[in-house]
Length: 67
Image (cartoon, rainbow, N blue to C red; front, side):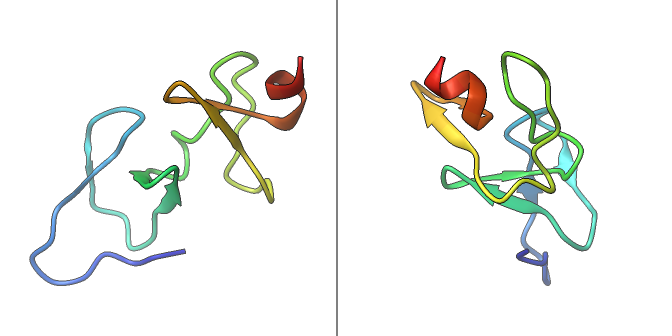
C-alpha cells in the first residue's frame, strides 16, 4: 500500500474525497480510500482481495468481471 507523504493531496477515485488516511489503495492507476474500492456490480469490498478487474473504467470482482 502506498502512503501519502508531504504536500501531495490524493483524491479518491471512488468518492472524490481527499485521502487523508496514511495508506490508500492504488488500482487501475487511480487512488482509492480502502473503504471505497468496491465491485461496481455486487458492491463487494475489494480492499482485502488479491485482484480486481477493470473494464471501461469500472471496477469488478472476479466473479462479476467474468459474468
